[in-house]
Image 1: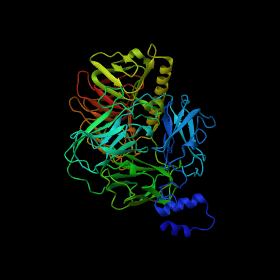
Image 2: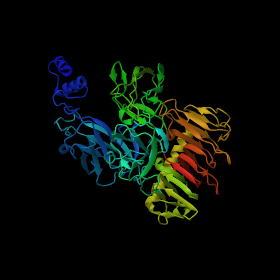
Image 3: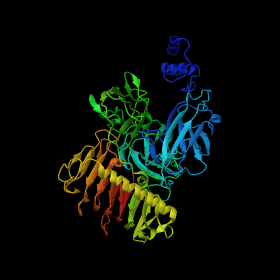
Image 4: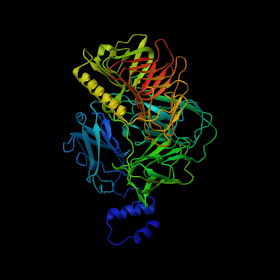
Length: 625
């Protein structure tokens, strides 16, 4: 009846697509004639991979496919090379095949050859794409991205799980989620690739699997029984059926990288259910903030892990004078931060008041136990006239976990793992103690380093002119990023170069004495809810993290991201045994990680990029963000 009453109030002569949209608004998404949610609506696109963002995504591998997730069931016959196209560059069509998966409502465009390197590509979904009810796209949907010079051979990993591995008392009504290190092929995230087993009873748990493209998170929702038995051990498994956009299978946590393998974790349930509604603990910009820079990301930090599938443009809305702003919404499971980014390249309108709303209730955001936000979280801010300071573009160097300039890379110890590519412009013989999927580089029984990516270096074999060209380009891009960091206006030196024990907001920090040390305590980087917050540390000479037998950590809180932390070091950097470092370190004189003979694992969530000298590791884990 509500839909019929809305229909009678419509002005005479409104077009059918507008009419259908209004009917959907009146009926809560259920078509008044066809009944099925969305069945009578013009098709919408809920996500793309590569993502449609502003600025456009860069660093897309040349062997990537393109994925489009629709909001309605589509007529497979209309999803073809006429309705979904790719041009690299614009005006130069890419030969490709197109397929459609009805279960996930995902269309896949697979190029027949590698995409052109370092090229702006334009993808488009035309009005020929139609729903199963026969409604077409109201207008073409177009977005762009830029390729890198490299193919993607790096296997994806699972970076965050909820419940966490070995969690002792997970609520018995929890959903189980896994967040990946990179964008995944949505059609490979399903009941075959994500399973849950009651290990105590030896039975499989029945459930459904969903995947949030924007958050790179897969969620398993148990269906029978509604509650998991309390005080039982469960085993969750994401298998190698799951692949990234380039078709690389998952690298498991129990396999020796870079081999493909399942990611397996366990948790024990409590006899108690979670019935507590989540809350929003912080927001950014702050409520009532003025002179907000135009390209600011609007974000909200939750007090507990959330169901990524409930956080989208329908539940996180930014508006001005009641008119929603076009944008994209993502959720970072590690920091529990939801972010709204406007799709306008210029950002938000200047000198304008905006209202941000996180929706509550049955159709709003919810935690992993299904508890919805109790009331809408609403706050406001007013923009100024200036754009926000941007991050530094690493270009092709972004895919490298370690780069040894023209001097090579050395590993000692059997527990070194590099998640990302590795390279040097030196001969491959100057890389020792490593292997990738194809080749061994001077490994011995005591020096074993797994590279979950590709090693690029100069001849002789396995080096080629192609791998040398790739390494040379990456070195040039790393040098350009170093120069850009060094050219930024200097910032403050909050403690005469000693960063230990400090809590620092996003900014540029410059050592007056030429060195930065994190030795007297841990350093905490507080994003204050802004997932795009950037830190730049400029030191004319050296960087030291930790002391011998006294490891130190860099901690990220309130939405801080390792990919947005940069260390421009004029000479050499050193990370001591057992320390945990964060950010991209670019140092002409190289990076030394740990000490030969040490068995404590040292971790760098970032990159170690030497411009002229080598990178040396001992029992080190590097994760390129």
